[in-house]
Image (cartoon, rainbow, N blue to C red; front, side):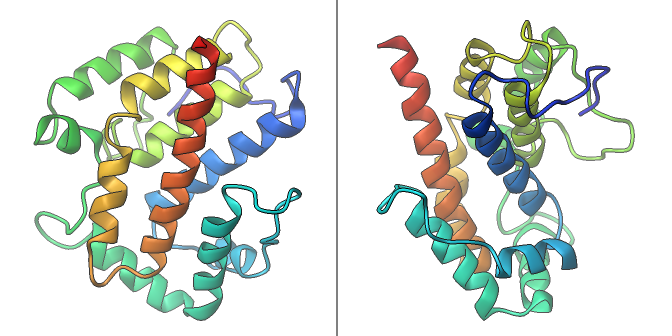
Amino acid sequence: MSSSTAIDFHSQADAGEELARAEVYGLLAELFYAPLSQEMFGQLRVAVTEAPTAGAFLESSWGELVATSRRLGLAEIQAEFVALFGGVGKPAVCLFGSQYLAGSLNQKPLVELRSSLAALGLERAQTVLETEDHIASLCEVMRYLIAGEDAGVSNLAAQQRFFNSHLRGWVDGLCDALCAQSQADFYRALAGFARDFFAVEAQGFDLLEA
């Protein structure tokens, strides 16, 4: 995604919590977009797994993701990415929302998404080949809506609308599809963490309406 608005991770009232949410969306975007990099692999292997509050909801699935990154080699994880999401023809697991919402790619959900992005002043960069409904792209938009410095765009109401309209209806389907793949190991752990994180986000947005 491209925008003329710079990102400032310290612009929110509760900077610590908002920074954490933005960072998780950024992490998910990176892990789902391309094979794991050497740099990210190293960061995952030394990541802290204990939450500040014992028994926190994300602690277990995050710990499993970190443990899996420590158990597997980088080449194994990179090969797993290609086996699940790459190759010639239809991939084993699709990363595009339209497939889950409409049964095929480039359907009405993508049109609606592009309308929402245009209203936010966002557009796909010319160098990006994937359509805007790729899970990584949607996570990047959420990161921007949390961390952007323009409060007229980056605010809780905008986050809630975008999440409910373009992520909530299909992310569990993606996680289910990943977990069903026998060759998934690192990405099964990633699916578990993503599912838990999105559940926390959904619950938080529901509380805004209570």
